[in-house]
Image (cartoon, rainbow, N blue to C red; front, side, top):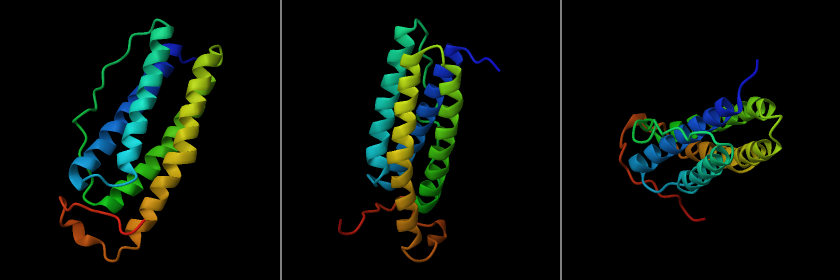
Length: 154
């Protein structure tokens, strides 16, 4: 089963790069909508933390092959659903990576804190987004893709 430390860090970075590119695509399509606008910054911090781990362990930092290559879904509702699913998958991925890094407690700590951010902050935010978009009436039929969506009071 043995995944090397390099493979584990590269898998984590690839996943975070993908998340950042996906959430950025949503912002490009729908404007500065929450929670994407906050979480895209958080993904940037996750990437920096993983890059530091690569550097500390003498591992080359892979390039971001996702930036600008992901397109937004047709609706904000769908974007929230996709993000909810992605954050759940991210948490499962980190379970495997934490195990793979068992000889590197410092890397495990980084993986655990990124997993916690995903589970405790990102996932609930996207679940709320999904509920909010679901209750805004109608399915929109995929129209108005460039509509600037602004939440109401609050």
